[in-house]
Length: 288
Image (cartoon, rainbow, N blue to C red; front, side):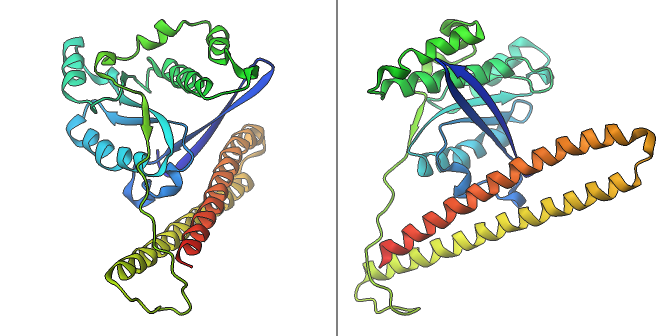
């Protein structure tokens, strides 16, 4: 994936609409997929690596993505996904990769995005797992049994879904919990460089400045993403103008699909920007 894309799925369970927002973020460093915006308020996550390049792609998941999930989410379900199983020639080779390349204590699922083997089942499993965990914390009886209702809807059993895991015996929990974030010492900032009376206050102030700089950098990247999408829209309009009449309807249909994707991406970036503003405001308040 280059950049980010969003898909939405809705289920009716117990006469209640359950909406699933699926964010697919690119792995390119130039896109900066590691900014905190992408890890805030995440309920469930697929950590995807390339089965044909496990040595190169799996460590990055553990070092970067898993670390950020642990840091920025309160609690979320996480599955490790080995993709491109269709490119592994033998079942034995696939088993060797699964045994040697995995993240400790996290469930592993092998899929092929190309052939779609286990792909939709993996989504069904993570949605079911979230609903089941969600039920545990409910006090209202209104949503009790909603995970079983989901199983009935997709016509599958829990055992069938869990058969996707290739290392279930090694898994302690499917949940990732965030660590306690370091607290900044509160101090009123009355000028650009406040009076600092101790080493602790100096360290806190440096952290504060670094955090604000990080926020500004991420906001700049989001704004750049807005600009890129506007450029794409201009290109789509130019393409429509050059389209022959006999193929105009098909081109319009394709353009509408792309515009809907761009609209979803705009909404995501706008939500990210608003969340970032809230986080920045909170950090500033902690320093007052």
